[in-house]
Amino acid sequence: MALKNCFLSAFFVIMSFLSSFCSCRSARSLNVTLAGYSSAVATFYEGSGGACGFGNENDIAQPPFSSKIAAGNRALFKQGKGCGNCYAVLCSANVYRACSGSPVKITITDECPNACNNDPVHFDFSSTAFGYLAKPGQADALRKLGRINVHFQRVPCNYANQKIAFKVDPGSNRYYFSAAIEYENGDGDVASVEIQAAGSRRWFPMQQVFGATYKYNIPKRTNGPFSIRLTQAESRRRLVAQQAIPADWKPGSRYISSVNF
Image 1 (cartoon, rainbow, N blue to C red):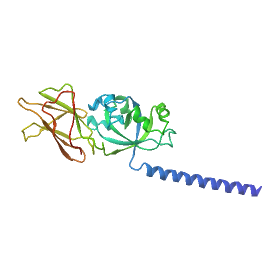
Image 2: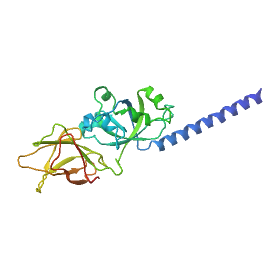
Image 3: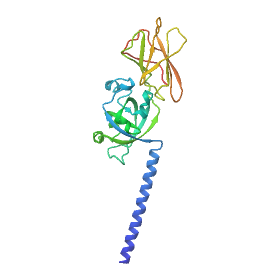
Image 4: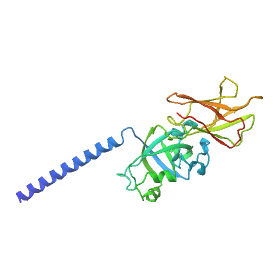
């Protein structure tokens, strides 16, 4: 009996040691994996760029967004100043079996108001982007959960060879110019937008209408082409999109510049 009790005691000591070793190893691995990440909640919807001015679900389905987008609550949307910010987001396979544990890079293109603000940070992914959080073949299983906890961090935007675009509001006219600014690398957002008319050396500030959409009341006898000067919010980097808006610009059109950050 004494030998049996001794054997059982040794067995439990060994198992306790292994359990402690595995737990510590998992914790160390988790800390390394999630270094620099913060916690948030994620849900999903059809997805659009409405509150930022980037367009509907058909617009954001096209490259370079390719539906890898999300609406953000007030902590992410920042009264429109968060439009264009990029984040790496992942969910843990230790918590949800369908999660890949690999980060997905998304862009904030819309606002998630009301109940989303019950959480400190809330991403409302497009259905497509939400599926990218999952292991191959497990996207539907993850979507069935509806609401999950995620980890996120701000990352630089990089749209490869894409240049900054200006999506002119359909309500614009010869005396009122308004456009959404899309695809900025780096910070992904802007702190200020200025416009310069043809033949002028003066820069005039544009005012934020909503999201990433800015306006300028065009004085009489002021003609294009117009150049746009952008200053990024955090890096304070500045660039000029020379004559990005042609003299014969049209409401509802999108004009691609020759520059990016």
